[in-house]
Structures are given as C-alpha cells and as structure tokens.
Length: 552
Image 1: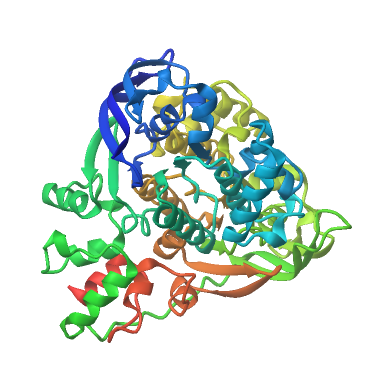
Image 2: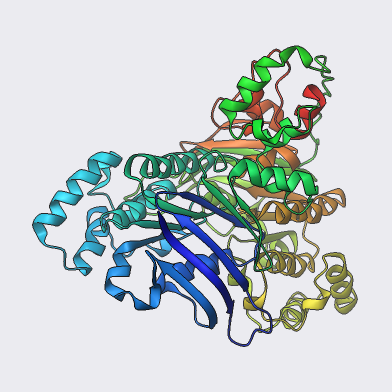
C-alpha cells in the first residue's frame, strides 16, 4: 500500500535563480526503509523537510505531496505533527530540557496526551530501548549517541507512522552510529514503521534499504532496490556515484564476477562470497613496507588533567601524546571521550588543571598570543562561527590587516586560486555549500602561514566526493610541511589518508600507531573491508584498494 507520493515537485528558495528540486516524482510503500542520498546541495534535506509539513522551508513550490492519498495541505496540521517524526542531524539542536525524563515526555505534554496514556507509552518504550538508567541523568552529560537515542525515543512516544531522519549518524562515532542504525532496522522490521533517512554513511544502509533514491542537482539520478541501483551505476560507469556504493559491493564488482544480482551488500554476504572463492587470491605475499615516523617533535602533551568544573569528573587524566612535525595525525575515539577537549588544550584555547603542552621544547603558556596566532590555525566543526565580515574577500582582508601579513594581497590571490575560492570573494559565508565554506575557511587560515593546522571533524556531513576533495586539499599542504592534527569519527577517511593515529579512551591515549597497526587487529572499530576480509585465507586489509590487490 502506498503511504507517500511525491508528484512532480519543484522547489526554489527566495532570491535563488535555480530550483533546488526539479520535477521530483516517486512513491513509497507503507513499511518501507528508504535511503535518500546524493552530493551536498543536491536537495536531500529540502526534500525531507517538505515531507514534514511544519518544517517545510519557505519558498516557491509546485507539485503535490500526498500522504495516504490525500495532499499534505488537506491534512489537519496537529495530526500531521504526530504522523511524521523528524530526527535532526545535530542531537543538541533537538534537546530542550535539562533532565532526560523531562526531555522524553516533552512532546507528549505539548500534545496534551493524558497522564495515564503517557505513563503507559513511556514504560513500554523505555523497556524496548533499555534506557532505564538514563532517565534521571542530565541531558548535558550524555554522549552524542545517547542524545540521539533520547531524541528518537521522544519522537516515537508520539507514535508516528513515518520517521524522517536527516543524517542522524553524522555526529556519532562508528559504534554508536551502527547501534542507532540497528535500532532503526528493528523499528522497521518489528513495528512496520516507514523510515526515510538522508545519509552519507552508506556502508551499512544499502542492505537495510527497500528503496534507494539518489539525487543530483535537484533531480533523481537513480531510484530502485539497492542491487538495481548499483547495477545501473556500474553499467553507466558513473564516476559521480560509484563512491556511494558500499566498498564491499565495489570489491565484488571489481572481480570477474560481474552479476549485480549476486552483489553482496554487507559484511556477512561478502564473507560468504569470499569464503567460496578463497583459493582465488592473486597475491597472498603482501609486501610489508616498514613505517618510519617523522623524527622531529613539534607538539608534546604531557600528563594532562582536565575537568570542566570542580564538581565534575576529569575528562582527561594523565594524558600523554606527541605530534611529529609534518605528519598528518588523527585522534579517534567514542563520543564524549574528550577528543575535541584535548585538541583545544593542545592549541591553548582551554587551560588544563595539571600537566603541560610543549611547543618546540617550550611550554605553550610561555608564548605570546600573537606568536601562537601565527603558529596555529583552527578549522572548527562549524566554520560559520569563524566569520566576522559579510563576504569571504572582506574576511581575508581583515585577517591580513590583523596579522600584518606582508604582501597580503598577493598571498590572498595565490591561496585563493590554489584552493579554488577566488570566485567566492563576493559571496556571504551563509550562501556557500558545505564544501565551499570549508575551502574558503581553510584559505583564510592559511594566510598567516601556520605550522600546525587543527581540524575538528572535517568530514562531518560530507558526501564521498567531497571527502575526496578535502583530502586533495590537505595532502598537498602536508607535503609542503604543514602539520595536521585532526579529530575524527571517520575511520575510513583516517585509514585512507593519515600517517599516524591515536585512540582516546577513559581520559587517556589507549593505543597509537599507524592506521595499519591500530585498526587491522580491531574487531569493531575498523573498516567494513577489514571486517569482511579478516581471517579469510589471506592478509588483512583496511581499504578497498588493498583488497583489490588481493582478490582480483
């Protein structure tokens, strides 16, 4: 039975010349699990918000959206509020109360649901999710995964028929993200709930999806069952969408077995296929290239203790780490372990209670602020917070003036051209796409010729193509001598591009080494390709490229 129908919908934001959505049409069956993906700016979030009537963006829309064969405009707004649930990308943007229990029942109270009914629903879902121990905690103390779970629970208490999710895993570590997706799969399988999810992390979603819809510049590029969509992409050799296909599926299709009907969509199916062809390994003697870490230490973190308030536990305790000059370093770990805290201590934004940060054999606190401003640069999670001026060009001019940069105009032109942002000088930061904003902010930061670039979750919310573009920006900068200190949840990105990693756990560095040393032996905290190929009569691999050398 058809529950949703999008009929020839076109949408344009005010003051924009181009339509964000262009004559979009598709239908969704009741109880379906639908994955909506595509490049940043392709119209995914706009389309998702149009389905949630009270969140629909302001602009010009043509065409109709039907829910149970009736236009959304004909439905009672109050009823639609409970029929459609919406989970946002950033869990903090959805939480309004201080205590978990208050947050969970907030929506029911607003809808004037009787107390007896509220209590009944609450007891049922709290047991279903197993969150009894969280009810009386402060929401501010929860991890990102717990916050997103609480958001989901508060929405489910309204008993929606359709659940809409806008990149719900983008702020979660790999394990928390997988746990959230497993919950969504349970809701779909056990409760028959219709789920529509916008995501860039697709490794685990293709196997769950009944339908995949891929958008490109406001148009539907591909639509259908997961294997059918993969088949279409491979038959067209569509380089724009190949990176969206799960790596385990790409491994299969890169071998001589080209039948898309048999393509594995997850680790389990891939392991079954590989076991059946284990004798066909082409190179079982993988050459081991010894790793030599760079020898000059630029930044040393010694015996750091840090707590945000005296009454709160220590976030970091006796934490030690060193960063070598010219290396690309990644700090990984679960939500709430203190990664961003450690990064901000390393650059002097936060002050530790005990311990020292050493920059080139001199304590950080001995440097003047202007010296640190020329040595360090910081690309935050939300680059918009960086800007003071109204245009990119004016912001770069402000930085040149503030830091008294010699030959500033020439340097500005050279960097802008190198990072392909010279055409953005007259644009407001709010008007840029995520990738454009990231490039522009990086250009601003490089004006002062920093020695160390600190980056906090740079791949958050980026599509696969944008991640590749980010790497193409960072790697040449590293080659030119820039030291990069990155905090990330993106294991796949770290494995592909960084030199050295460390895992932060329980306030300390639990392990460190090259990506190969750190992730190949892991069981959960590793790549899909590693989980799919480990212990199958061949060397362990982390990336698709490594796997292709062994299994083609």
